[in-house]
Image (cartoon, rainbow, N blue to C red; front, top):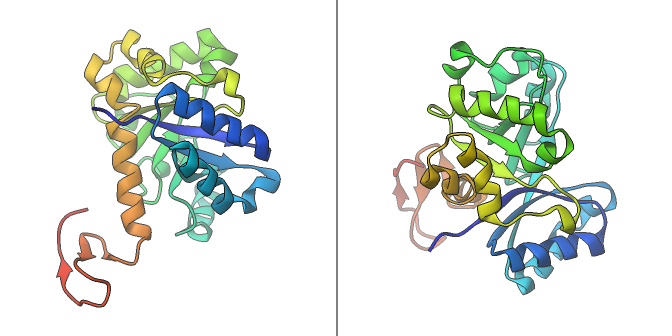
Length: 237
């Protein structure tokens, strides 16, 4: 059976954030990646405990919207090791080219009317996943669908695609198959569309949890066995 992930939900207030988690559990998700805003920024561990009671694994997400390459690199350095997931909103080609291949970035979001062309040149640089926020579709269906179609056609063969809710309201959440229907109707194969809300985001989460653990030594090297043992594995991460 698949496990499903909503890769971007927004927590703005405690009770509403808990309602989000309860709704995600009812919809069939096992994991949620939450951007914490305002006073909730210091409530991660409490929310994780509540999420565990509900049956959801909660992970923290950082959203970056840099204006330049230099700003992006500075923010990535200052945020290192503090978040399970980092997503970059790319409003310029300069930022997109850096975010597309920086190993500290987990997904990039290309907004409607990004100000640059999505072409084979951009596709050749892609190393990270491209994320499609479903709430953006609800806000501007025509423009969002036009950009999403370009992403699927040009980048979809090379990059992993993730679909997320990007919502702070339980009423705007969608079930995993509803989210997967977005890339599917745009031409993505059905199994890969389901991967966009399951295998692809889960692989990112598990990889990053390992990197943040005490077992992680360096890229491609993790400790195995008990914590006091010195045995090291060189499995590829």
